[in-house]
Image (tube, rainbow, N blue to C red; front, side, top):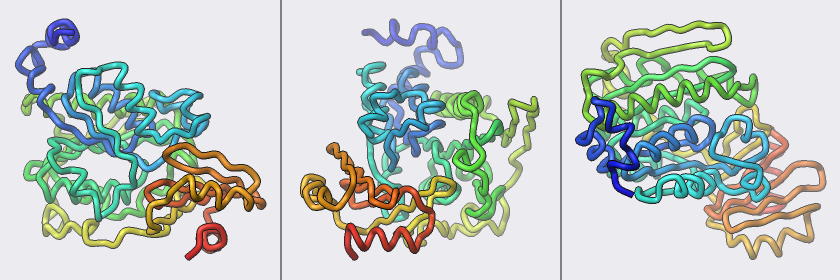
Length: 338
């Protein structure tokens, strides 16, 4: 299929045109988080013809995702496919002429700079400020623009943050503990997800085609249920900002959390184990658990007391059904070892 045929309507938009389309096809973007925002972002980037789309996510598809995570279906949930794999499968059928890279891993201080390598732009599809600050610091250290977005309940916000031009995320939100409300605690409706991700996507397209004069220079917030919208000028970076002011990039120097309670999800992630041979662990765990399901990416085991153990091939373990770190560590020790 020729470029003129596939992208004809987009190229008729004068701010893109043939030259802009060629720039898009030569572009490389990273999307971190392949949930609600990430699936919309990836859909726009792939359909727009961005030449290389790298997607990173640590989670797998569950039935509760289907209400708002637009690339997934019931079969993906039944198979417990990693979100990046299910997304890649769908997107490859939409546009086979670009490179779609699926990275099934957790983003940590140890790997974030490698994931950014060669990327021109980073799109935020995450659901927590700890990962956002990690991306923010890595982007501003490497000089890569970061397109921030967040959605919860019926509210959303978005901004494009460009190193050397705009403030960074830390200039507005100074603590990773600031995000107390999540989709898993107070819910979310799908239209706000589409709206926020679309605002992110259009800023990405402006940047990638080189239309810097059209870039939005504000942080927008909105509540689509209560018909509220506000745009706040980005202004200048704070002199004492540890990232764009002092160039300390604190998230990059922190040790990765080996034990992480996932807010509102009654789940604890424990990392640090060597990679699992899932076939070996299937045989080891089968006599000790109520039910066990396995695919090439992960193993899910239902435990006697109601919790569920999920072993990922990369060595991560998810204990579902509790947010108590002590309880989670006890179950980890019992079934996986020290």
